[in-house]
Image (cartoon, rainbow, N blue to C red; front, top):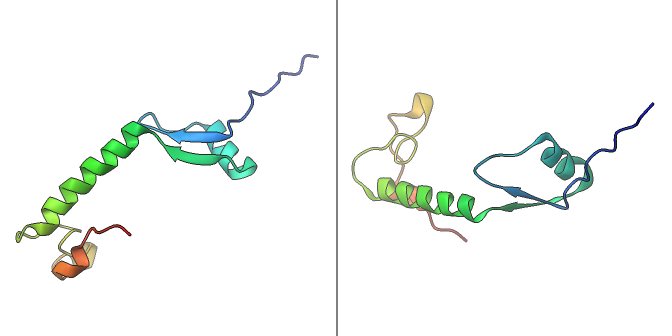
Length: 87
């Protein structure tokens, strides 16, 4: 009987546009691998943040940005609550 050797698990899992694999999840959950975001992921997050900031600054309501969610969709959030400032 031949025993197949499993591929070594990575010490770092890079989250990118293609997603993750089962091996990535196992490496993090069971073996403490570090998680990092790829340059492409960071660029996409920055782009999304800019879009949210534009919506938050607008006087026109934007669902989930300047309003609540679900049953609270008609509730306006205060401008200060819409701040996207990062610590």
